[in-house]
Image (cartoon, rainbow, N blue to C red; front, side, top):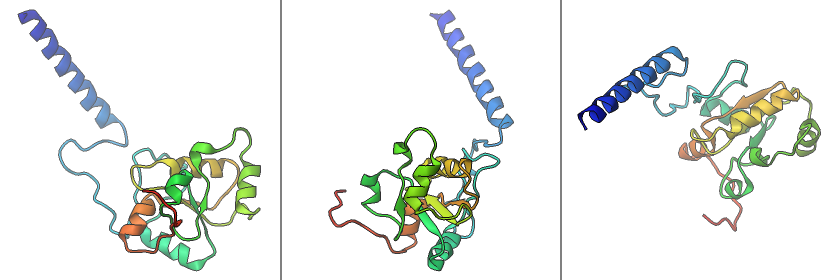
Length: 174
């Protein structure tokens, strides 16, 4: 029994040290004590830990609101239709990431967006900070040639929390 306890302690100490070393060597380090990212203040964009170099730029709520007010930007909701219908940014187009067709996505995106130019401003979002669908969909748009893609990672939840108008389908079942 004594030997088993020693082995368990060695495994726990070794695992902890390996975890701490790995955490300190990678750019998206997790704070050990405090230091977690604050909720959005409206001025700084929410950037997920899964963000990589070359990803579309992330925008803050104030920029998203400005883009929305110009009416010259397409907003794309990356969530599935059941979530979309329960509340989205007004005028958004629903392109669910989880249901993208296989193969070349360019013709599909062109048909969903009405054949807009590749440099037309796009803001892609999903439900909020726990949802990576917007980031993945944004990468797909960039991969097929869209050059003016922005990610609003605060998503519909941050939009609503700031008291901005939401569009809902009347038969929504929450």
